[in-house]
Length: 203
Image (cartoon, rainbow, N blue to C red):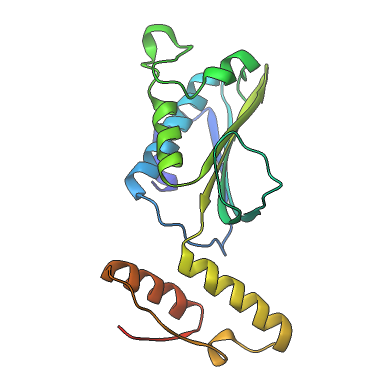
């Protein structure tokens, strides 16, 4: 889903602000399901701002450690962080406690109560984390953490290490041989490593 599609969805009285990290790492998730997540949360924002407002979508790289506390299980490591924030009417703690439950809705006959539960299911199946933080009269902040692809994480870590230690490109110091039963996994990891400047063979 690109910016034009989101702007078409949102009325002119709602401003869309994109704050996107140009060096964002790769995460391996279903594109159409991720677009559904953006669509569902954007529609919720639309309903929460009947008089207009702003929806901000932000992406950045982050690291989750074992010290981080979430209600969902997760593994420490590198993540892509996706934040959606609006300045609508907000939600109470009571609403937040049920927000991801199937068929739970505050919209009466307007909503079916499945949108956010589907978002939760997508994030959980992607081994990620989704949180929501809000106060009444202060719009919610939905934060989604999606794990960085394994090959991308390795390449990023080695690149940072080598650049700090020698100032040279990682590709000059390391080469990889990729072996996996799944050819698609080999191709994905190969593309990630090559884009980071590594020499890859074995395909």
